[in-house]
Amino acid sequence: MMRFLSILLKGLSSLVLLFLLLVLVTGISPVYSFRAPQPFSGPDIFNPYQALDSCQGWKRALFHTHTRVDGPWPVNECPHTAAYTDSVLRSLGYDIVTFSNHNEITQHPYDSTLQVNVYEQGYSPYKFHKLVFGSPAVKHWDPLLPVLASQQQFELDRLGADADLIQINHPYRTVGLPQSHLEKLSGYLLMELDTHVNTENEYWDWALSAGHYSFGLANDDLHHPERHNLTAIRCNFICTPSGRYEDLLPALRSGCYYAMRVPDYGNGDWAVKREKNHQLPFVEAIGVEGDTLYLKLSAPADSIRVNGQNHTTLALLEQTDRIAYNLAPDEPYARFTAFFPDGAVLYTNPFARYDASVQDSPYNPAPQPVNVPLTLLWNLLLSVLIAGTLWLLIRLWR
Image (cartoon, rainbow, N blue to C red):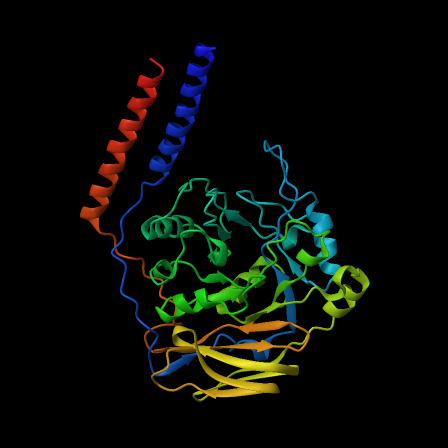
């Protein structure tokens, strides 16, 4: 009995040490001297909807979708095939569906011309997950507990090195992604929006107010297309001639799209859900004239709000289908949110100040500077701790 308890104690101790070893090894990263927050400024206003005039119609899209996958894992997060998931979403009015399984590039189930190489990267229980577009292969390395902003920035930089686009996934439920981190991080162009309990997206404004420009996408993060309350409750309407990647990529990079929160119409009656999902209000006109931002909707909203720096409400109109707002020279950015009577919510991408003579957009692609002395000290400390943990493991079983 004592021998059994001794072996059990050794086994448990070994598991703890192995977990610690994984945390230490995957915690190796540069230490960044993050640029100070710098609100957008300049004589010009960036208009993400400047390509709308040539748009051949909004196309409804979902980019964060999970399906059943083949592999060594005994449990699938989704019980359904990509073909089934696609068929459910298309019956609800979606034109574009991409499959972003965890750490796996999934092939389109029936049309190779619609293939989009996108996957959700991240193993961390803290859920610091990223959507990676256009990478030729999955990058599996991931910090197990990325609690430091430098570790998170290293992930964004590493994944972005051979990807077309990076999205920060579900920041509202990512442990260890506070306002202070979002005010520092860069290297992504897309921010995932919305949650069941909060339609305000304050975290987006934290990053925007610090000068980190990004576009917003709202996605179901769909795992169960058979469940009415989890399906077709978030979506995007994008200005693109088709769902082919050669058309999608420039559209995603330009920002000519808007996101929506959609009620669970029918509350289980799929016929009602399908009918109502084909009747969503939409953006009829949006853009900039001089310093005036404008939005025209296909149906009246309960209210249309203009949010700006530090999540401030710049303007609010009620019972209207349109709004115009003059962006003052000292106001860094503004974005529209429309709240409809039935619970639908529409989010536009931000209009932001910049200098068109020196940059194409307010997005700053420059990498964050690395603090070399601190990087050496940090990784030396980790190396010592790794060596100490290995020594304890070896000593435990001697």
